[in-house]
Length: 148
Image (cartoon, rainbow, N blue to C red; front, side, top):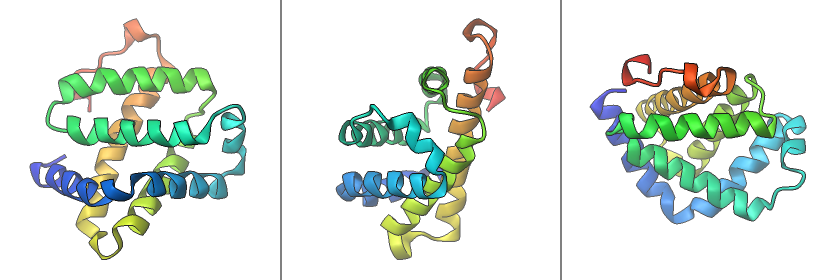
């Protein structure tokens, strides 16, 4: 991601922050609408708590874009946990689509092609690290910044 893209992600996140819980609700509604089978992963989950965790994870990513050496291990751990929950590799694409749709809804006219490209880049970074961590033993995965 370019420095300009990182700024776009951070600035758009600040605009969305006041409606974070609403955005998280929209995200899960959209996620389940795109792929109803994903709902089964949340059958015993408190969705209010899950929305809070989603916002925390997004904030972690946004705030960590300038320090990938610290961010990547946290994302990798998240990927390993999601694999234990039963998340499949292809579901990351569905999550990405739901996230971008949610951001578009929340940002309205602030959702420009440049902001979309920046968020797409940020999500691709996250999804790639999580997928890698889910598929390999933790000791065999190199999460150096160069791999991103």
